Image (cartoon, rainbow, N blue to C red):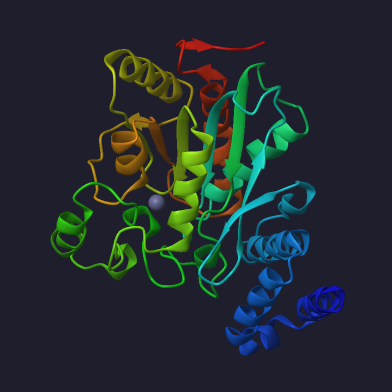
Length: 321
Ligand SMILES: [Zn+2]
């Protein structure tokens, strides 16, 4: 076991030193071999480190400065189709049962400026520039579709061509998902929901994570439509408090309208917000992928996000202590 771990580590390091052009030629076989070997090796730290190296390479291609991905002690909650790790970071809290906000980014791999929103917020909480109020929990999943974001060319669906945000097992999925895709999405291949509900390992891992951690709210970052949407069903008071927060988030953001975009079969908003009754806030950032756009998004929406993390949905109160 020890030999195979060292072998994988040496190969990974060698791969990272290959000239980008040569690396591109050797892909995708080498990429898939590398990730399968890293997953098999049983060294989660090495897999996370390599994921962060790939994220930084993608950032460089986008003209962005390095992410701080490798500074954070990520844990793994699942694996993608191509065997990249699905990672999360738990803010230190007093109790695991603390009322949890789950912040998710990158379910659509080509919505690139969503991912830094998660990593920057994580960095600020990690550095304790922002103090998490006592009794509240905060978890970040910065990249739910690593295969899409790290594909040779960024792509919305996962490595099997499935739109993960259409693949959650919502009631009536069998009846509706492919019919919706044919009619509303005009069979756009970027929005293919899959041949069956919850067929993708990324979706199964997200579902299991939500089941085991029971967040009180989920915030999911997308681009480029520029609005905030809330999916919330349940008792009247919870829905009322959930709406109160949505209005507050809009007020604390620059140019973000509160909008109802509709319910889609297989979406996270439908699955968690309507079916599991966990309010889901979908924040659609405006377009733009430049370094300037990325920083503008953080300046315009970072505070609104932080207010949402400080909000206790059970009591309807913003906590600042
Ligand atoms: Zn999206």
